[in-house]
Amino acid sequence: MKNRLFIFTILLPALFVIISCGDETPGTATSSDGVTIAFDSQGKGKPAIIFVHGWTNPRTIWDDQMKQFSAKYQAVALDLAGSGESGNNRSEWTMNAFSNDVIAVIDKLKLDEVVLVGFSMGAAVVVETANQIPEKVKGVVIVDNMQNPEGKLPPQMIPVVDSMMMDLLNNMSNEKLVAMGFYKTNQEANYERVLRLYPEDVSQIGWQEALLGNMKWMNEDCIKSLQQLQVPLHAINSDMEPTEVEIFKKYVPGFKAKIITGVGHLVFWEKPDEFQRLLDESIQEFMKQE
Image (cartoon, rainbow, N blue to C red):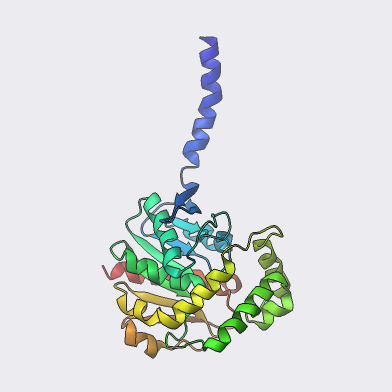
């Protein structure tokens, strides 16, 4: 009896810890090609907000937004294959393959109402995801990407961009990041924050292939995929280059663009409060369209 009482008193506090942590779930899902996909889920409430990072980023790039939005919604951030804590045993590094990573997490969490938020390369990923599971998606928000869906990268420029971006990863500096428009304000702090995304021993398996896959999608699949969308599409972009709203509306009639001024590519780092206000505004607009 005393032994049972002792075990009970030890296990009871642990049980309360497990129950109290129920709103925050780190986990894994398995993508359609067998790659393990790591994710975090925090908070409760519908719709679930799915945050998809950009090229080579880990899911921690969204930490501020996860904290903010989990107070009101279920907030989910995942590592696409080849990034963060996810696997990299993949042979096809296409935007469609990445969309299957997102779907695997949605299925694992049994979510039936989601808003997809995709930054940079993640914009292509969330568009492809929405086209696969339109019945679950309330809306899509692309973040600082695809400002002109009709823009094409000339074939001769693809190896130039490839070389430039891989050099940035392998020889990163604050000067390069600023010159390439990643951020404008709080430069030293943002540089240190970027460095923390990329530990020295990080694997680069799939990174170059994903970059080439994204450029191929922009040149060959972007317009077709936009035309297939059955859900609302909004953009939250910086003002570094104009967002061609009228061109977008040729393919997605209800498209809306929300512009944050005075920032670089990492709009949600430089002006997080404004970004979060605009994103919540879009979420509310999506839900009213039911």
